[in-house]
Length: 417
Ligand code: AMP
Ligand code: GLY
Image (tube, rainbow, N blue to C red):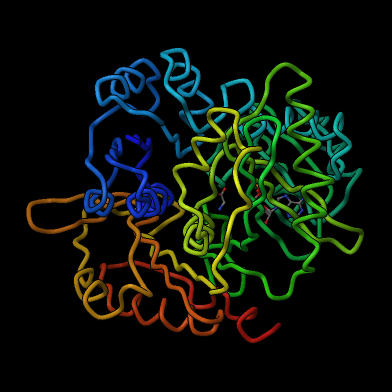
């Protein structure tokens, strides 16, 4: 099978790494990719938002499957363009990707499907915003309706900050605050059959102790030793399957990866958000534990044949990933700084620990930073404590001027808290 992966972050590096280890994959391409992905896949330049260009590239390469990593191409209809060219695509149509592209649409689908989520109001005027803030009280949760790379949400006790964020958006969703731990649960679906993956936890805030601004994600781990073993089954029944069924009944079936961001509140499990693609950095830890070769599963979703697959198999090991970000991330990051220590990690820490690249670029003989999140240092171990120790040992070898990372990824869970 010839596979083309679209994207160039650590999620795509994780996807490419797994696909490169799959004996069914005879050729692997990634567009545009990054310096790390170049070690496992052949890179091609492409404008990932241009459906015609992606379809043409897939045709030229003779791809049997196109895997679209990020949300922006999906929301732009890249999946539709490739599918129209007769090439199987892992990733939903533009219509179905609205589940991520519009928070208001996602709320409407959840209401129709009876999926538990925070009560909310969609607001377009300052008066509506004030009324919604009053209705729910503090802490205030204000979400930009459109795509914002995980940075469009403000959760604050400060009413003025909540109003200011709303004033900067065309349309916002204001909702009740959900307490309790968060879980990311992914499912692979062909629009009918839904195969949940193992749950993971993401660390969204920039700083240790969940302080600082929201980011795309600063680290993740899986499994969740503290979670109810029935969680996956419960979420499949109450969230994932009803959502997939609702979209199919609307005539806009969802195939690809359905990502449920959940809050386990004192009043039960609630959906915080849906995404229409693999999460980053959770994918790095989920795929580290998946034993079933990946390509056949993604192709089954693209072709509508998931019901014919045997159950997925998983490693008992734990996985932890720590994101190394540029100076000033999640603000405008500083880029172009050389990254050192990559070869040392490969020589000293592999295969249990390895570096997945996000924003990196090859410049002559050196690899330099090229984005906000730069690397996702991933490790496996017999338990979270060991995976964590291995990941941080590898992190300590990396040198990137001005970089930042959290030191507490999976710390509480590893201690059984
Ligand atoms: P989202 O982009 O919707 O995932 O929101 C980003 C982050 O904001 C989430 O991971 C939560 O940490 C936080 N958040 C979003 N919605 C809520 C809510 N209703 N209550 C509490 N925290 C929330
Ligand atoms: N890790 C959060 C996301 O991928 O949206």
